[in-house]
Amino acid sequence: MRSNNNSRRLRTAAVALLLGACGGTAAAQLPIEAGGVEQLPAHPGAHWVWVNDFSFFALPDGKAFLVDGDAGRMLGLLSTGYSFAALVIPHDAAVIYSPETYFSRGTRGIRTDVVTLYDPVHLAPLGEIRIPPKRASIMAMIAGAVLTDDDRFLLIYNYTPAQSVTVVDTRTRKFAGEIETAGCALVYPTGPRSFFSICGDGSLLQVALTDQGGARSRTRTRELFDGLKDPLTEKPVRIGDTWLFASFEGTMYPLKSTPAGIELQPTWPLFSAAELAQHWRTGGLQHLALQRSSGRLFAIVHRGGTQTHKDPGADVWVWDLASHRKVQQISARNKVASIQVTQDDKPLLFGCSFESNRLDVYDAGSGKYLRSVEGLGQTPGLLVTP
Amino acid sequence: MHNPVDELMERWARGMARRLSRRHFLRNLGGLMFGAAALPLLPVARGAPAPAGGAADPGDPQSCEYWRHCAIDGFLCGCCGGSAHSCPPGTEASAVTWVGTCHNPGDGHDYIVSYNDCCGKTECGRCLCNRNEDDKPLYMPFKSNDYNWCVASKAGIAYHCSTARIVGVAK
Image (cartoon, rainbow over all chains, first blue to last red; front, side):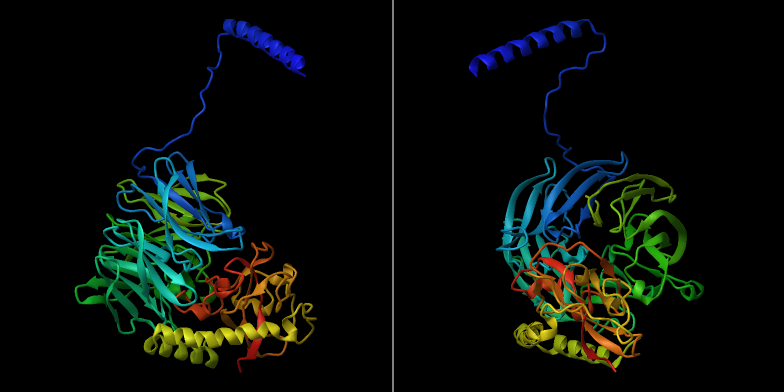
């Protein structure tokens, strides 16, 4: 056996020598390549987007794809566990938080919930924070996990089915506590130490936090909307101190955070009487996006009945927030269920749908279709710009 | 679009959300869960074959258009080894769930349909169906199909498929 190996090595060496000699005379020899692992720049590009895949056909295999919208190129991936919703990224983008759930035997065994911290340069785990195994397993919603305005506390909606919010201290990187929110769902930050949840009766639960992440106060507003007649979708956008919610029938509800608490500002209609008569409505999973500097509100729209409030749409309409007037209509190249817009001065509009695994890229100003990136997981949901 | 059952549930939920502490909530919910958990012990939920259909229950339980599926969101258990009202072998029926009200064109009645999830395995992956008649946002949990209702199951939250079981007549 040994002599066979030796003779094989001799033959291999002779062939390599011969090839090397021949190669020396060739004009266009490719260089020998060193292997390696890519890494990303310290600061994310202005046109990057995380495409979060909740992977509905294989829920244990959640993932997030990082895509460069200019190059139409995938830059990397994070593997994010069972019933994944979305990455949460602080203002400085120096770390990536990912609320995740795992089972010791894949789909059974001991459940462990963690917030995994990822290094945004190497897309590798830096560490993890254990949290109670209560993280809500829901259709992906941005309001499932958010940071307070100063990025100090990460707030995660729990449903067991008792409702509460897990508080994680990002400074100590430890679980800080749990706040009961009985009858109220999801988490919407309103400042460095405050958030609200939406309650089933149309009121809001306002919670003020201590510097340790506990509940300093909890108050309920009056009933601000009628959840039976015309519910607010739980997928708003935020500009400054105001959250903008769209109702099923297309009325915008601005909820402004004031020192006296959250106040409902005058509502305004997205659709004209003629458009309502034609059954135009918003729909999708992440159906609103906001370009803050220009004050332009983007919404996925379609024509359909009341039961189509989550349907993807083939059109994206744009409103000017100052005048409340519709200023643009964009025909999407493909139906979209989620949209996101970048916040730079040459913004891109991204669109995707859980019905395909494609990301479409548009010029957010002109609405012109630019390019698509195919093959991004199974059921891409929320789009998050770093 | 509303019906008395919806309004009754809404009033109950509003009142509970307003008045009761989490401890009360859990106690009440425990009763609800017990009620739901007992239901799978009924003979109809034990590996029973798919309904025969016919004029009184028209349509194909493996079709998204089947009348009971008016507010379902998930993989139809009838395509996965179960039926419209029973879970596939080796899974566990969820202890809590959401309900819809669907109109049966066969007899003209509106029925309360309980969309119990079947839990403990990975996704069946067959016959995905999402219909949202009277579906409400996540802040009205028992009217929302965006929750994973395996949440309180012994088997854990691993979601496999969804049933559409008749639990009452709405009128």
